[in-house]
Image (tube, rainbow, N blue to C red; front, top):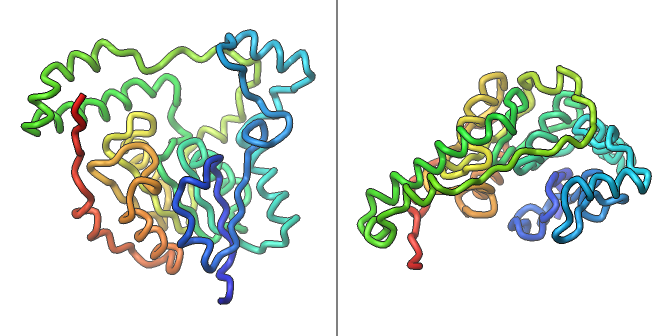
Length: 270
């Protein structure tokens, strides 16, 4: 079977993301961005290690944290493309990988055929300061769905109180890295075909981010899944079917009719 180009996964755990349909007729490239996975040095903290101690250990070992930014990693991706001799490739980014994909589209758009962005981070949003409101919206949607389901409402009558008492975010400690150039936090303007997948129950990268990003993309489609959370591709055969059709014809509006048949939330008993 003839190969139909290359597909780059900008995620660490690609083995869990239902790749069989992709690798049948495409060359699959999986990248560990600098500092993650098997890249060297790996910037991981030890179990139960305080964040400040972790940063101190990295610095003591000679790690220059100013070199660990999205722009530098996007340039790594471009260097990899040249080394592999690939003229253009398709991208898949998940979560932070969507931020990296957008940086790549900003810096090296001529070598990207299409992009699938799953559970988007919007570069123009402050992901730390804006995380709590976005998460609150997703959690409220989950609470509302539970309240309208007789089984869930009976089993979890205090679910709203439980969520209101929980804390999901902690303040990030300063790592000493300089702020990226202002251009890195501007909306991406691109005419590269893009498919944006988002779940309405995603508290990490809420649907509002996808709606914001698509405003400045001229050839993009947003597909919202009303009962899914973070990481739509791995959760839904429908999402993968839409994605594969998009890869085959990126300029054709996707058929999203299967979204209506995605199962509703299944409430598990405690």
